[in-house]
Image (cartoon, rainbow, N blue to C red):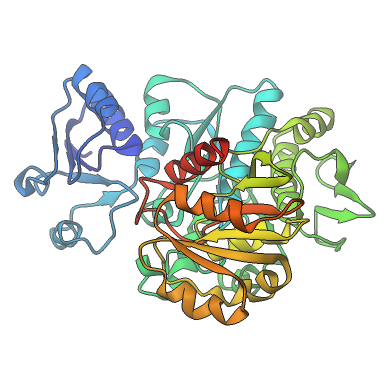
Length: 444
């Protein structure tokens, strides 16, 4: 049993891990190379947990029996390499928290749709009156909740970075939405490494567990035979297929197992093809958890959506403004554009993660009437999109982006912020980027 635990990163997950580690009797130390938010300092100080910020004191870290690493720290950071050299185990906060709870774990990963699907499952479970926590990339950290509350279920959104440092953690229900190129800068620009990270969600499953996945996703289809699947499979599909336990047929979403029921597509709170997939994955998860079909139907029809995900801001002079700041990869932007019913001015750009924009080409030519590049380095966007002959503009602040969109868009059109990129060149986070967009739009 580890005696001393060092925690790298003091954000939501690191602070939660520290609180749980201390509660379980470990000598605990927290180190962050950036500054720590006041909220987290206060949480650590209240519990007398030692911490440092803006640097790592190596001696206080390499003497740990185990290190809990924030998902944002790359696996090849010099300090991480040093710890590996010394054979000190490095785990994620989720892995650590999983040791101290017997709650059922419903875990969601994928390149797109994770947050919406996780939030939707949580909404259904809450509505059914279950004692459930929401964790992972969303809500409070799992470790904090395990330390402070007693839930029977957790619905957890898992990124590939979190899965990277999970070894014995066990998902009772694992949901894999899709796999498209993302974060390749963290995976040696090798797609297979990223795919392997996503499939870690099914490691440690037994035949009592469930694996829910989108069976039409080309990468999942190709990769599935390479992995040993111990859980029961529950695939979903856009069209009726023998193996699919959820599909769309004659404008109805049909669920077949374990309890068969269906609902009209137009009754669904979320619209657009990708949201049908999110609703199917959530519906299957709830159905397998024994939630009554009446309750699932009601929850799927009154869910209010996720901030920064195709969020309608307002209409100004006949133009709709939509905040999709959470679209930090190309495929998310593709889904957003696909759901647009009108001609669109698209605001995109930011910190490029090795993006391949080719999959957007057709939709942009079909749906867009203007492009606004919002970023410090827009050369790649110019090189790819300028040849389409659409009006384009370069901006380096959200106010300029919104002002330019206001000039470009005509009545009956839509302005869509769906950046394809990470936000860190100009904003603190995708939430900050989305909040600034909403504020600028409301000030028009």
